[in-house]
Length: 247
Image 1 (tube, one colour):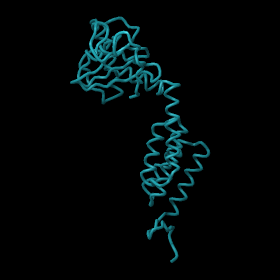
Image 2 (cartoon, helix red, strand yellow; image 1 turned 90 degrees about the vertical axis):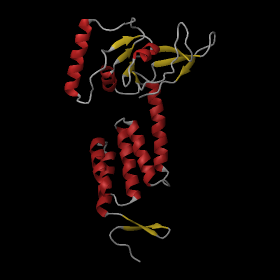
Image 3 (cartoon, helix red, strand yellow; image 1 turned 90 degrees about the horizontal axis):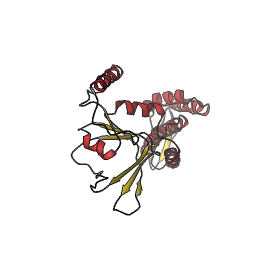
Image 4 (cartoon, one colour; image 1 turned 45 degrees about the horizontal axis):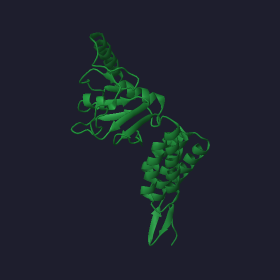
């Protein structure tokens, strides 16, 4: 039997129906990717996705999206697009291979860079309720002048970000993670500056437990390679380096 309107046999007694126009649009996305017009290619691919009429087309489009995201240096979205490609056609090996390459590139980026762009790091620092800086002196809070400056800073921030809620307390700076955990209130964000921090599983004169119960907090590091946690298990034993996980 002849197949019309772009029908293609999918085997096992079923047929896969594709659209000629979708094939043409996919070819345009490929051309934009080849020309390194990544932003335009992403826009064209996202426009194409709702009109894809087969798992094969969906999978190919998502894989092209992954390649464009990687071309822009956005490895996280590249991995997510690979996942979508695999979801639509799990027997196709290319998205698996490309996802592995993206994971390797992300691992290398975490070892050699801060793990995020300077703008995002600065934004996370600006929105944090508590800053942990190993070079900072111990702080018991802000002066009246400091509180006024902090309120002005938060007011300016709210002009640009309507979703930022009113802080429960003025932002403070401490030099130990356990001190930040102790002071933090429910739902607050702690920003950790680059440095080496020692933590332990049990309380002592120098170190407090880094295990925390009863609070939902957000802990954000300024760098995945320069924020180092040294986990000290017992006295006299060499500390163990704990990998810092990005937010």
